[in-house]
Image (cartoon, rainbow over the protein chains, first blue to last red):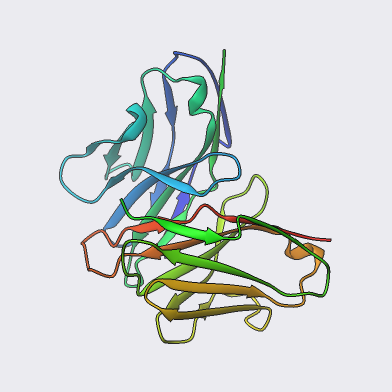
Length: 113
Length: 118
């Protein structure tokens, strides 16, 4: 079985400040890791993914994430946020025989002017 | 990139009626499609997995007779909510997995359907 924990349900931050959204996972097998963004009343858009190789992954909209196997973490970062980054962010993991995606509870990023 | 569409984007129906939601993969073939349900300010909960040409696999606690899933082709899956009740009001999101066998087996998500049962 696998699980994903997003440690913060809400993260308020001022515009142009850096932000980190935390994600920890548990799995008994090797995993693929994903971050998705969801704007209000919309589906999910893939921000970035880790499949293998370099542990630092760069995605769209200036986001990046670092895979840390020893700490089973995949935290999402952005050095300078914009108002338009206000959205819900979901961390997800895929692993195991069924290759099912398991989502974390989500983190609401609120960027204030 | 791969595109998944859903129709309708929102629907209001009366209690006791049925409503059908379509999910299409527009530019790729999807042997597997997933249906999720999302309540306000909550995460996505997998309802069922459907494979083209076979019966859907439902997650524990999901009523298969209430949420009918059909995956008749490699580009179309439908979710029918039968005898809808207000508690079925939710945001339904479908996802399709590219069947070409890329290592990531990436899933692509539709824009969602907002169902309101009055």
